[in-house]
Image (cartoon, rainbow, N blue to C red; front, side, top):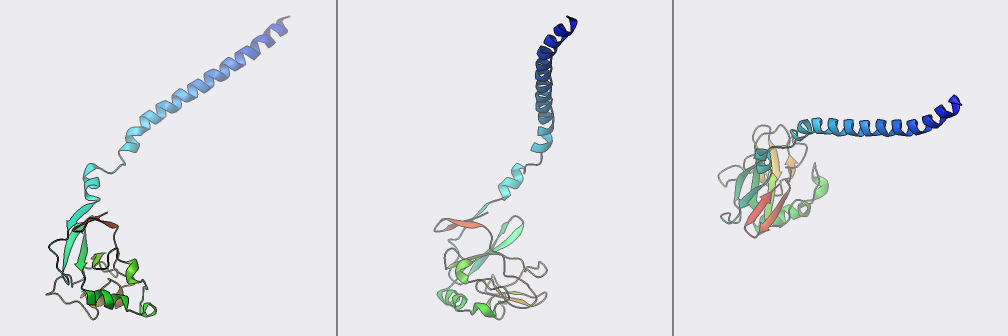
Length: 182
């Protein structure tokens, strides 16, 4: 008789024990998650970093053929309002002759506005040519005097040691006179 009493109890005790194991495990998992959350949350970007992630630039003072340099994420960004001649020159280039072939239409959202990160892709120098008084190189774009890289009016590498074109950042036009970088 003692065996039957134990057998009956074992079935009921086992399900209760399983419930206690599951409940203890669930409470433990919630506790570990609550303890770990401050460590995980501190890895999110700070408010200062989020504030620097986008920058709006007023384009109204830029006339055709001129450019400005804006800072975005501690990098110079060249914004140039291209003339019709510069646009046509950029579009007429034979892509097979370029070290890093990319059509002009893929590099701009509006043909008159070119937006590129102003860092030479060779060794990270700042190319010249965003001001009329600076040399623009052999192709009318930018010239990096450090090692002689020449970029055209679309920011594409044409001559010199730079392996790739000037990078096009993420940007969008907020309205006709404002561009948002980032």
